[in-house]
Image (cartoon, rainbow, N blue to C red; front, side, top):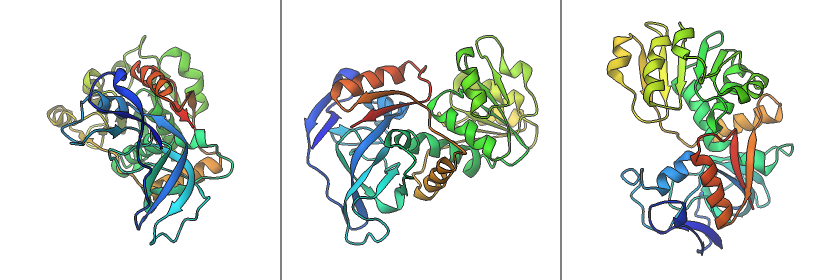
Amino acid sequence: MKAVVINQYGSKEELVEQEVNKPNAEANQVVLKLEATSINPIDWKLREGYLKEIFDWEFPIILGWDAAGVITDIGSNVTKWNVGDRVFSRPETTRRGTYAEYIAIEEHLLAKLPDSISYEEAAAVPLAGLTAWQALFTHGHLKEGETVLIHAGAGGVGIFAIQLAKYSGAHVITTASEKNHALLYSLGADQVIDYKKENFEEVLKDVDLVFDTMGGEVAENSYKVLKQNTGRLITIVGEPNHDTAKSHNVSAKGIWLQPDGEQLQKMADLMEEKKIKSIVGATFPFSRQGIYDAHALSETHHAVGKIVITF
């Protein structure tokens, strides 16, 4: 099968098209013929070698960890799924990712794709959507009536976080440049702060939960707006500053996404009910050039919504 791989760490130039063996379904796996995948910052961070201490993999490495497609083969123990089912998934993080025509995925990580949702819309969801879900609910314990600040609301994770937080009954504040304000209000944001014109830490206070997708100075200033004693910060960019959190009398936690088919199925149901939706900002074809261009766009940090690859 055709795959786009890296044979060493480095720039986008390391992305090459290569023939690799098509995977077989182990006992508890299915094989998926991919119809769409999407790009996430982990893809190019891993490509550049930033994560090689965490993932000590042999080359070639197939990047990509969002899958939407059709089951073509099922393992001997698989009972829930059939050949021909439309599904989507955040597969385990392995060196055989989704920049390929086929992928083998554990059956418990799959979610059924509603007929009303396209493969492109579905591929935008798993990694970003599950990250938002777990940050807000699994770790952030966001409750109805609370106030949440979501940084970088127009990004891949932010668009899902805004919608999920709004669905849960929270008061939703986010940061974004002015050109994205109308979109974010349409997704359910109650207040959008233009980070180019206003310092959020000067206008906000008594926030229950901050969802930090930025790190650095943004994270440091976020502690100032949290409610004392009960305020909490959840970050997806490394370990938070526990000393700063302690000095502001709040809690802070760094999280790493756990693939979860059941949570993804809940998101699929919300999409079918039109409670949440994907925002696909750009699509590229599955090819070396398409993925090269998609990485280039992701690296700008200014993509709106998700960047999707179609097969």
